[in-house]
Length: 363
Ligand SMILES: *Cc1c(COP(=O)(O)O)cnc(C)c1O
Figure 1 (cartoon, helix red, strand yellow):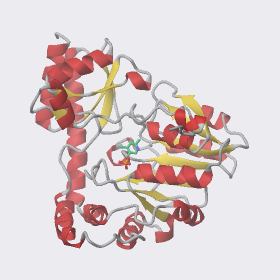
Figure 2 (figure 1 turned 45 degrees about the horizontal axis):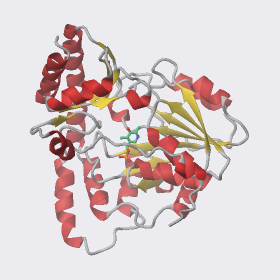
Figure 3 (figure 1 turned 90 degrees about the vertical axis):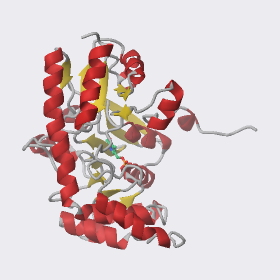
Figure 4 (figure 1 turned 135 degrees about the vertical axis):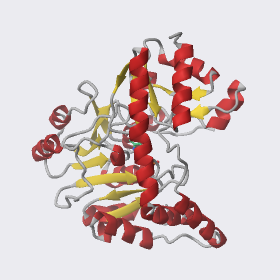
């Protein structure tokens, strides 16, 4: 076999997801472990979503609604938009892929923050784009430096708000100044995967009300606050003209029928959403207090996860924590060799995390 693979594809480092709990338990011979590594919702899925999935099972022999009619109508209603402004995807990852497919030809440029969500870089590189990586300023996004990098060849800029993995947010004022500097041909994508958790009153929220006069895309997901990561549903809010271009490259049945039904029901489950948010806010307060007690350095977040400086190689700490049955994420590959990232878990899980950390760090 002699595969003829373009160099830009060979050069991609595949995305390395947090391993599933079952796999780690098998590998390390441990049981009853807890996972705080992938920013998932510790409450599980919304009960209403589960009911909807149950009702949808008997129709699995049918194709899903390729137009996603009911879900798109509902998302439009909730966000005060027209349905023409909404595109649904197999996770928001899918919308990212559609955006680069529709907008990028090889040699075009894409500006991304670094470190941030790796899929922007991977998707753009796969499409043959030249990726301009702009370092964060401290832990926050450096919008000025990102705008400085724009050229005639720039087609897309990705902004992550709150940023994964640092948990920082962009203010409305900073974003408006940034947008004012950009030429009209550049599409700005604001990824709001964790926006439901943001508390800062000055935090930019592009989805409400959406600005559809500018080339701006807001990404939202059901994977985090709604607890449906395994089903894969996300959506993009954007000007209708751009949505039309995404529909040209979209796979006709990209969101499966159970995912559509569950997402629709989850949008009605206000109670679950509020419980999820409260759990995160309460959990953060407790975790901060415990880390203060241990004298550890950490970085306050606007999201459901945050960074902790463990003062030693994070990869080694990851292994030691694993042996205590606690799965965290080492930030080495993100450029923070001494930081771990954890998401807020259930009260009991947070307690176990702190105990394990005390043991491992001999505190
Ligand atoms: C988890 C996450 C998403 C969600 O991706 P899905 O494909 O919708 O599951 C998007 N962006 C960021 C920054 C994330 O951390």
